[in-house]
Image (cartoon, one colour):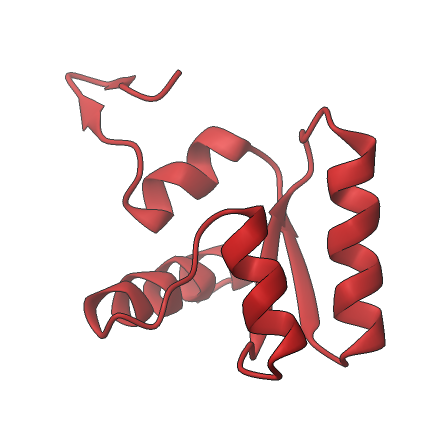
Amino acid sequence: MDLMTALQLVMKKSSAHDGLVKGLREAAKSIEKHAAQLCVLAEDCDQPDYVKLVKALCAEHNVHLVTVPSAKTLGEWAGQCFTIAGECTCS
């Protein structure tokens, strides 16, 4: 099992147990409360301030940061995008 497959499985299980936080605001709150164990960030994020904030929060609060290549992939894993007939429904 490679890292991305393991991460996908962890995110799926976390979501099933209401332990998955999505979005910048919720993620920042969770990290600052020391409730976060892991933070996942898309490499293709086109907002440098967003990336800088997430990396700084994770470093300050000793939260592990993992990057994935695509925001669409991350959205699918988080349950925010669905693939229908091979096409992602997220915008």
